[in-house]
Image 1 (cartoon, each protein chain N blue to C red):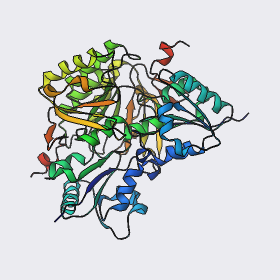
Image 2: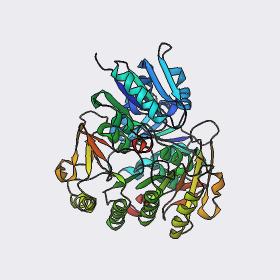
Image 3: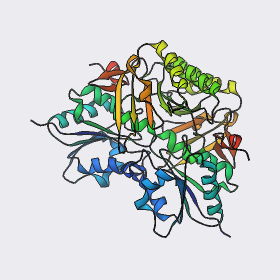
Image 4: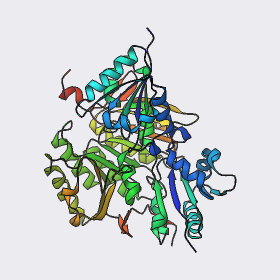
Length: 245
Length: 245
C-alpha cells in the first residue's frame, strides 16, 4: 500500500492571521487531522468536512503522534496540528522518532511565541537570542540550571517559555536571581500573545511579579543594552552607534 | 496632521506561502512601501499599484527606516518589508529608536530562518535554542566569542546566522573549534531555505566544509543528544524516555 504524507504544521501564536498559508493549505487538504484540542479548534474553519479528526489533551503527545504516523503509513494525507512552530517545544522530533520511512514527513514551520511576544512588547529580540523553558517535565532541572547560567554568562536576550505553573514556582525565581547579577534588566511578558485575552507588561526585573506568570505566558528578559522607551522594550542593534546620530 | 501607521512586517523565509496573512494584509493596505530590494520583490504581487515604493540595498538600513518613519509621521500608511522575522536581526528595534510617537508602530512577526532551516533538516530545533550571528558588523567580536562559549557551556542546539562571508571566514572556524569540545556533533545547513535554489546538507562536525557556508546559509549545530536518522537531524525531546517505549 502506498504511504500518504504527514505534514507537521506549526500554526503560530493562535489566530490564523499569523499562520503561514502553507500550513493552512496542508490542513485544508488533509483527510486525517490530529492535534491538541485547542490548536485544532483554532484552525477549524480550514478543516475539510470529510476529514477525520482526532484530538486529545495535554500529555497526549505520544498518542497523537502515533495516530498521525499510523494514518500516514496507511496511505492517508495527514496534518498534525501544532501551536507555534512545529518543532520548537513541539512534536516534529517525536514524529521523526516514531516514523520508519521519514520521507513521508514534511515539517511546516511557524511563528514561535518568542517572536510573537517580542513583537507585542516592542523589539526586545533584535539580535542574538536564547530560548529556554522552565518546564522540567522532559528536561532535567540540572540541565535547565546549566542553561540559565550560560544565558547569563553570554548576556543573551532570553525568552522563557512555560515560566511558571501552579505546581512549579521555584524554577523561575532561581532564573531571575541569576539574571539579576547583570543588573536591574528590562523585561516584559505577554500572556496569550496574538490571541484572545492578550495581556502584557514591561518594566524592570525588580518590578516583575512572578505570580503574574503562567503556562500561557512568555517572559522576555533583555540583555544589558535593552532599554525601555515609552513603555516598550527595545534592544538597539547598533546602527546608531555605527553610522552616527 | 494625523500620523499614519507604521507596520514593520516580517515576511518569513522568502516565499509568501510562509508569510503570515497579517503581514500580507499590511503590505496590501500600505500606500508607502519601504524595504531591501529582494524582500520587496518577493511580495510584489501584494503591493497596491497606487502605493509609492522605496527600495535600497545592503547597508541602506538606516535610510530605509528613516523614510518609513517620515512617511508614517506625515500621515501615510506604511509597510516596512523585512525578511524573516521583523525584529530578529532585522529593523523593528531601529524603528523604535527613530520614532518619537511609538504608538504608531505595529510589529508583525515572521518565521525566522532558524525554524525554516530546522524544518528542512528534520527536527534539530526541538527544545532550548540559542541563535547567534557570526557578523561582527554591529556586534563586537569579543561579545560574539563570549556567546559562543556560553552556547557551548549550556549544550544548546545553536542556529548560526550569517556564518561566513567572502571576507569574514575565521569567526565560524573559531566557533566550530569551540563546539567540537562537546564531540563530533550532528549538524547541518540550508542555503536559501524555503526559497528558490534551496540546497542543504546534514552530517557531523568533522565532515562540515565551511567553504559551503555563505550569508544565505543558516547552520544548525545540534546538542549532544541530537541524532541523525535517515539523513535528517533529530533532537529527541524526551517523550520516549519518559513515557517508555
